[in-house]
Amino acid sequence: MHGPGVAMGGLTAGRVALAGLMAVFGLAAGSLPSPVAAAEPASCQTVRMADPGWTDITATNAVAGTLLSALGYQQKIETVAVPIIFQGLKTAQIDVFLGNWMPAQSTFLDKLIAEKSVEIVRPNLENAKFTLAVPKAVADAGVHSFADLAKFGDRFEKKIYGIEPGAPANQNIQRMLDKKDFGLEGWTLVESSEQAMLAQAVRRTRSKDWVVFLGWQPHPMNTRIDMTYLSGGDAYFGPNYGSTTVNTLSRRGYGADCTNAYRLFSQLAFTVGMENEIMAAITDDKKAPKDAAATYLKAHPDLLGPWLAGVSTRDGKDGAAAVRTALGLK
Image (cartoon, rainbow, N blue to C red; front, side, top):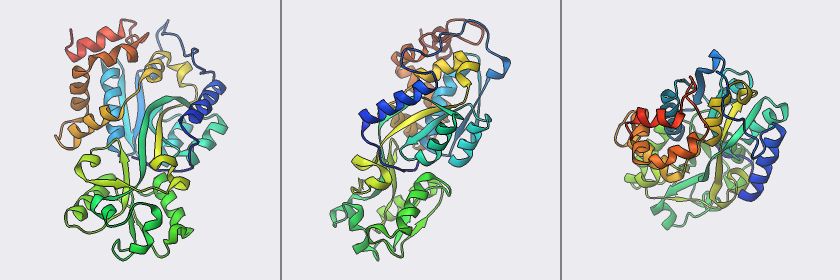
């Protein structure tokens, strides 16, 4: 999941900035590493990835892991907090991270980009959303924006429910409370895991108690809770109700070291609908993440061509054919 930060100047501007950053690292459009011509180092066989404990990243990691396994790689996932993930990228203990929510994590990313210790591989999800939300019944009672919260402080018990301690989202919410923005004097942030936060939001919604919590999409919460996103939080969550782009990051030099695996990640992208469906299979149907991912890919084999163009197996064979065989596709 996730945490907002500095407002973004719009999708077009974001793409321009991203293109500039990619150029700095020799990754301008049209100059991605060519398909692997010789065997990668043995160290590339294990792809070290990370999950902050967010269901969306569990889902996208599962998609990546399904593809990597069919190509002859091993995926190793560390479940750790966002600050530790960025430190792991910096120290080359993590190879790839699929969960760089921007502008949410800009306070972490900007410094490492300046140091050239991490690389932006590509945006892997656009049209995501991340900001504070309330149940629809609360919105119907008059809470439509951040500015409406203070006048109903007693109904909310002056609490905002966030996610795990150390998450960028929580840091931004705490910064907002420390500054007493929107008249939120005396309010507190309740930190917990994604699952615990959502359980509290669902419980309070069903009991018709008021609650304001961190909401985002893609996520099954959008169907589990009849919820409304709040306006007015641009300074903390970005414009357009926290409109967000999610990037794939890699450690410095991963593209040069592990050319074939890097090419896969440079072409791997998702949609809100795709992630919602896989996450629902994980959270609602209780499927194992890789089973949920494999089921989705079997139902949408058209995705494989663009993702696997020019990607081989570890031993140099046709990567797309290997994945289709592993999935039981003709």
